[in-house]
Length: 152
Length: 77
Image (cartoon, rainbow over all chains, first blue to last red; front, side, top):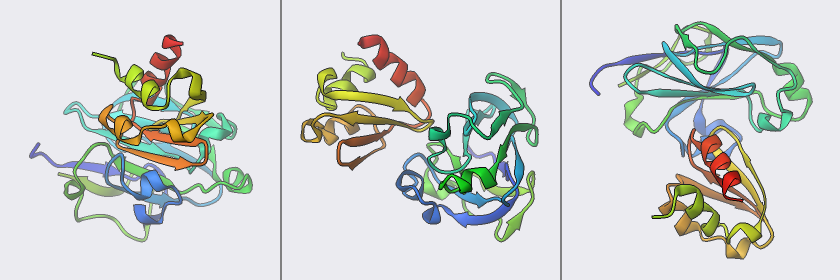
């Protein structure tokens, strides 16, 4: 796969390396390389990171697969499956074809944190080799929809 | 050839050993009666990217097909 795929930040916030994610699966890049975004504590809209089909859409996580078969996982917060959707509102449906930047989920990051969970959100290039996402990786603060990393 | 779901159930010590299986988007969170019956190598052979053990809670990292595998496992029961 020689083509380059720009993966956009699904949420605004501060870019962190996966190693700082408080979850061993993501920190260890077990499902793929990526970066994490630490969002502001407010109601945040998470957007599609790439053009593609929403193959999985949970309140707390989604996967968008591109026409070339690359899947990007966005996991909104850590251990948020336990919230069973509380504080999350779906803005799209599983199976939808979406353009990068389309809002998919609105969530209350402050409520997630108040419940004792981290709203830090990993953005993962599923099953990619570690070297597939190199520079340029955004650092510092990003807006939703800004380029986060390039998947080679 | 056993299905992936069957292999995972066997590697978790069989269906009698499994208290609960809950899929998250990348993993199966399972609770077992006896963690010593869990065969980590067999879980990896069944396709797990990784296995995390904390007491009787075993997380099997299978990637985004976790939901499908969990429902396949439900169907076996």
